[in-house]
Amino acid sequence: MKLIRQRESLGAEQDYRRALAILDATRGGATEPVLRVYQPRPTVAFGRRDELNPGFARARQAAVDAAFTPLVRRVGGRAAAYHGGCLVIDHVEPDPDPKTGIQDRYRLFGDMVVAALEELEVPAQVGEIPGEYCAGEYSVHAPGTAEDPRRPVKLAGTAQRVVAGAWYFSTVLVVEEAEPLRGVLEDVYAALDVPWEPSTAGCVADVRPGTTVAEVEEALLDVYGRYSAYMGYGPVVGGDER
Image 1 (tube, rainbow, N blue to C red):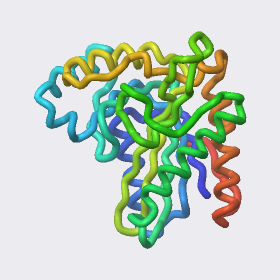
Image 2 (spheres, rainbow, N blue to C red):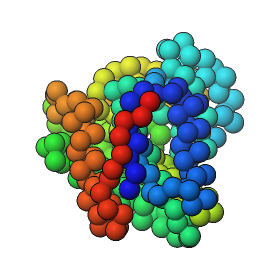
Image 3 (cartoon, rainbow, N blue to C red):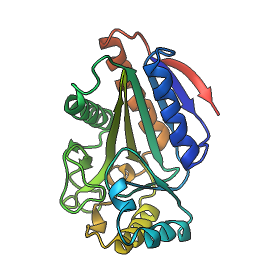
C-alpha cells in the first residue's frame, strides 16, 4: 500500500481535488491502494443538504468570518469543521464491485480508528452520540473527557465515495484544540437552523490531555500496516510529499 504523507495542506479545495484525482488514478489501474495522511487548513466542509438550506449563504459567511474556508463536498452529511489539529486519512482502493462492501467499510475503518486510539489509552467507540455535529451511525466517540467522564464527545467522522472500479474512504480525526471548531460550528449550525449539542464537539486531547497529532498518526499507521499486510498489499510504504 502506497503512503502519501502530505506535510503541507494545499488548501481546502485543492486537498479535496487531489483526493478525487487519486480516486480517478486508482479506478484506472494507474496506482496501487493509497493511504494519504495530512493536517488540513481550517475548513468547514458542507454537505449537499447544507447547500440547499435557505441559510446556507449565512452559514458560509459565518465560516469565512471565523477564518475557515467553506467547502461543499460530494461525500459526507452535515457541516463539519477541521483545522491543523486534526488528521485526515484518505484511503483509496481499486475494487471491481465497490458498492458491495459499503457498510462493511464503515464498520471496519471505524473499528481501526478505535484500535489506534486504544493503543494510546484513549477509550473510544463506534456509534453516533445524541446531538453530535454531522451525525453519523459510524462516528467515533469517547464516552467521556478527562474533566467530565460523563460527557461524550465526537472524535472522528467518516465518509466514502464509490465509483466504477474503486472507492474512496475519508476519516477526519480531531486530535487537538476543539474549541475553535466548536465555535465556528455553533455559528454555522445557527445560520442553518439545524439543532445540535455543542458539548459533543471534542478532541482526543480532551480525553487524554497532551496527546499530539504525531502520536495519533503513528498509531493509525501501525493499525493500517496490519490491515495492509492482512489484505496482501505488503507494508505501507511511501514518504513525505508537499
